[in-house]
Amino acid sequence: MALYKMRYLHHSQVDDIILTRDDVDEIRHLKEHLSLEFEIRDLGPLKYFLGMEVAQSKKGPVVS
Image (tube, rainbow, N blue to C red; front, side):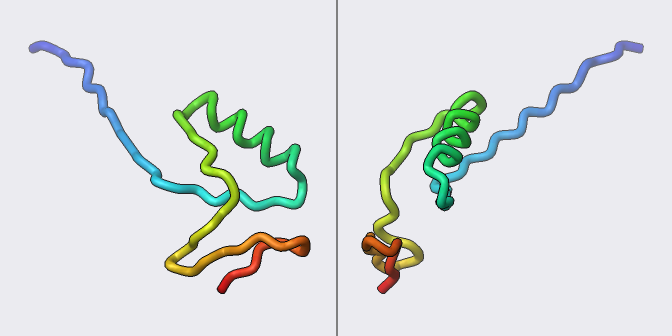
């Protein structure tokens, strides 16, 4: 009887993740940590979410 090692490969793809936080350094640290495990790109400030436009103001994001 032959024994075979079975390997399972699981692949997941995430299109977009929205990171929000008051602490810019904390966001930078999280992105650095994620980049160690995943291929990531920073797409910049949020512009659209679920079909709604997101504008940036001095007080923070405004959804319209």
